[in-house]
Length: 465
Image (tube, rainbow, N blue to C red):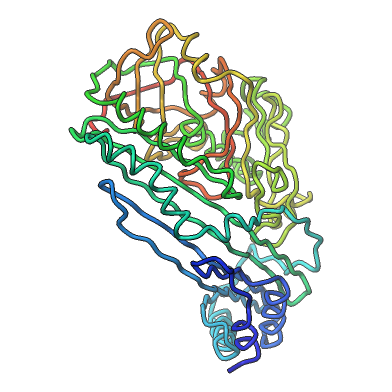
């Protein structure tokens, strides 16, 4: 048995009943990377670690269906010979396992074609802590997870005509990165992500709620359960309303589902190559130009207490506060190391977080100020239509309602929409308080407000609930 494995067996266990194991400490992660680097015969080597514990609880049909815990370590070894490189992943972190992964990555790298965009490894970097690790989350017991689920299961069972289904995932993990030039970064974090769907027994109504937090104690499971139950009851027996352009009141989840797409197009390369919404007519990009309503600002900041994201990107570049849009004006685009070198500028790194600032208007007040419009709970199955405008298509889901004369009057059938987050954010009428959402298709923390906007384009009806 290796010294590392002996040391790993001596890691302190939580005193909680579920015997939760903490992620690999920083000193162990650094020692593992240094040991792997010493095995290398390549020109350079990069090592990335993902280690920790993920626990989950799933329920459906008003009862718990599965619960589990996975503790694992994954190591990715990238070896390079000049512009040739290859990666091998392993979860065998014994000396023998690491040596095998290094040898395999070197053999594959020698066979690989030259990468015209290959970049040399970074030297030592300075990283701040985003303080994303909370013992309240890491030590959340199986009993606590079960009690969280019961906040939805009990009212659904008591109602008799509701069925609840949900998924709760709790992570206590650490990411580490290092290389043969002495660069080393370590990011420990915890998250609790909870999504819940409640449906009526007749199959016509559906309500959804979800959230994500770093600190377990900040998750209000009862409030989420109440929200989903109320949505399910209100949305049963929906009626058809003619598609068209409507004023919409989007709850934060619906906003995040579509607005997060802006982050996928915030790269300078895409703009410089003419395949981005931020290409200026006649050439160049739109930095310095107004692109959305002046009340809208969008940032990335791993040290924002609402976000607490990874403080370095996949190359190991340190990340800080990045302002993409400020008061409606495009302020910057992000540069990879390769594209920064090509354009003779400074690399910024790819963002790990997304936050849209908001206002103070509540969803209730947005509804009261709407003569005729539609209230949206969330979007689903979004797909790109035109990258030059971020025009996307998708479906509404789990609670779509007609607003008339300042009141929600009836549940309506879902729609397919064709719209762009940039179009929507140019039609803003009111903004709510930003909140962190869960259940999106993108990774990383996302914080957005509720939004009221005019002229959102619904193109057809959907019979799905």
